Length: 233
Ligand code: ADP
Ligand code: ADP
Image 1 (tube, rainbow, N blue to C red):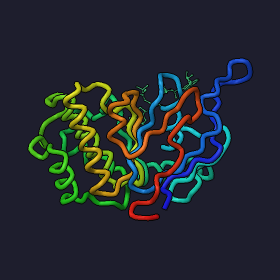
Image 2: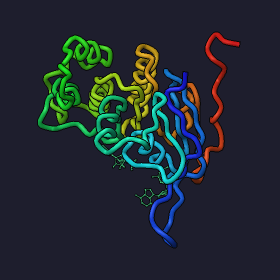
Image 3: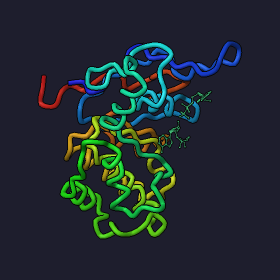
């Protein structure tokens, strides 16, 4: 089952002679539970791709389907709800709230969602899974970069998003911590059948993923194909 489909997606920034074609005819299919690396040099279109899938921006042409629903057909209001329910974001700079402790940072997306109540058992499970349960009362500035990114990952997973989008999640981490954090992403991917799209410019990190999509100059140069289904023909 495909959780994500991009067909003939194009993104143009700017107008007339200042136009930048950031993405050109992108066609990608992603199965539920895949851990995908998006690799390319700076300016190749990686962040643009992630922003479109996350509904932070809209394509100039083409369709993006998440769980079979075309996100281009949503109103602004529906898009906000779509993002909250279906997409988890992790960024290079962690983007934690400095005035909230670890526990409250992770619970934050739930408190935004009217009609949802905080599932304390699940927060505890996630914090333990990510090895930061003992840090739950600490504030972001009391944590290392790797610990802060674990908190950000827990927060991104708390609403059980269909897709986790990670933009250079280990960009500020040393190589040992990078390996730990990528390992945690892979564990979450397997344990929760979590689909992950991770942007990185690091080929070695990308090797840990199930599939590598290479982007050059706004075009996919490899990795569009799906692997044969697990246990299938
Ligand atoms: P990457 O994430 O691979 O570094 P981006 O997706 O950020 O690449 O950028 C792709 C291209 O689109 C680049 O040429 C960049 O300068 C351009 N671009 C990105 N965002 C904007 C924007 N908001 N306005 C104009 N051009 C942009
Ligand atoms: P990079 O360091 O790769 O350039 P940025 O941190 O600038 O990435 O963010 C990439 C994209 O994600 C931008 O379009 C930005 O608007 C968006 N973004 C960054 N932080 C947040 C956030 N906390 N919530 C929502 N969108 C964000």
